[in-house]
Structure formats: C-alpha cells, structure tokens
Length: 233
Image 1 (cartoon, rainbow, N blue to C red):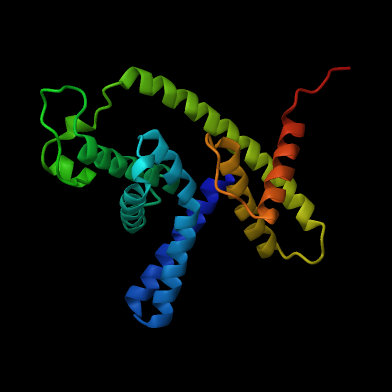
Image 2: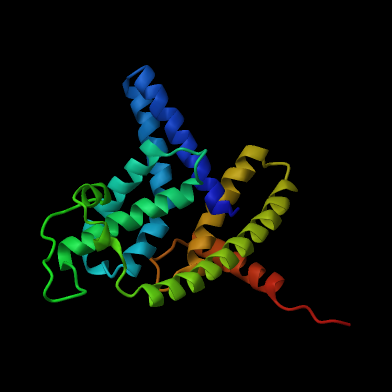
C-alpha cells in the first residue's frame, strides 16, 4: 500500500473521529477540529481531483468540477466503511461518478445525436434512482479499458517508487535527534504526497514554493538513482 493511500486512510479516520466527537458533544471547538480534519483530507484528495477533472475533459469548468468533487468527498467520508474497501478506492469511485454526471449535464449523451440530452445536475444516486444506469457506460469502453490498465500499471509503479523513497527518507530523518517519531511520520507523509503528485502529473503543475521544489527535485533524483538498472559485474 502506498504512502498516499495510508495518508488518506489516516486522514479519513481522523475526520470520522472528529465528526463523531462533534455529534456527541456539539460545540465550537469540536466543530473546528472536524473542519480542520476535513480540510486535511481534502488537501490529500486534491491531486486526484485535478487528475480526474482532466480525464473527464472538464478543465474548462474546473470550479464546477471542484464543487461536485467536494460533495463527493464529503459523501464518501460520511458513508465510508473500512471493512469493505480502502478509502482511496471508495473515494475514487465517488469522484468519478460525480464528474461523469457533471459531464452528462453539460454535454449530454454524446454517443448518438438522436438521443436525448441530460439538462439537470444529477448525482450517481439520482441517475440510478431514475433507472439510467446505462448512461454511465463509457461509449469508448475498449479504448478506455486499455488506457485505464496502462494508467493503473503506471500508478502502481509510482506508488511503489514513492513508497520505497519514503522508507529511505524516514530512515534519513530518524538519524536526527531533533525529530520525534510523530514528527518524522507527519513530514514523510506530507512529502510523499507532494512527490507522488509530481511523479505522475501530465501537465504543468502549479508554481511551488522554494522548499517544495527542493523536496520534489531531491526526491525525484533519489528515485531515479535507485530505479536505474544496476550493472552486473
């Protein structure tokens, strides 16, 4: 399991605990803890929201895509059952469903000019309730499946490379007496999420601060060095 997946699992668990505490004893402080926990969760999910927004061709309506994804994330966190799936899998399903519904609302069913177009904002739940499951089928299924398989392999490779780097990074930080185990883990998780995003991003990313650029540059160099084929003597 990747560092990013583990970070998401920790973040959603923290949010669920904070939300449960808020429900049990409502108050401003409990609300603030819940809001902060959700903000941390949203920050970790943000890179995959940008990725899926591009995949569904919705970069021209990125604000709308971000809004429906926020709804999807909130619903995923509210309904998540860790006994059934990892959160990274569950939230991906929710995000993709909402983005596909948004694409249908904006562009209609593009498979045939003779078919009616969707004109209302519909979530996955609403589409299923309306008996429109077939709208969710990708018309270019074979191509999409092959591309998804290739992307999946790339993602697995990226997860492994970043996980290996995180192990080395954790060992390096642990040599300093100034770092506690908790501080080390928080730093490694945050850096791994940043590196993971930049290892797979397909388009120019947002401008990074000097510190983040240094982290990414150093991490990618380390990953390249350890991933390079070793000469046999």
